[in-house]
Amino acid sequence: MKSFSYTIADENGIHARPAGLFVKLAKTFSAGVSVTSGGGTADGKKLFALMGLCVKKGDTVTVAADGPDEDRAAAEIELFLKANL
Image 1 (cartoon, rainbow, N blue to C red):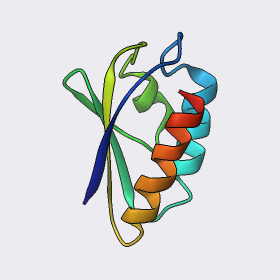
Image 2: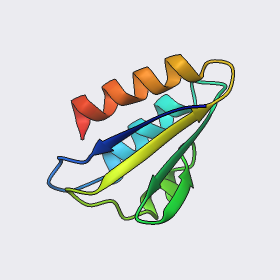
Image 3: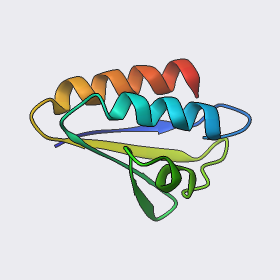
Image 4: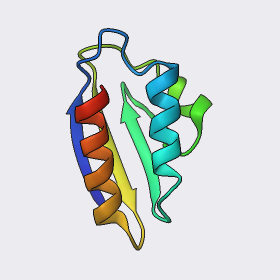
């Protein structure tokens, strides 16, 4: 399992557009992707689960990837977060 933490910088937190792009990216990997924030955990491949975390600016999320391409998944998702959130 590969994981990393990231503090959300976007004024709107994880809102619909970047959440949709996050899920689209996560679905390209065979590894499972989970996002944890504020005591809740969501499947990173399910839009409503991710939105249900209600992540705001300044919240720290932990993203974990587990599977055959976990290294690539974690690296690409981390780059996505830094560029978009």
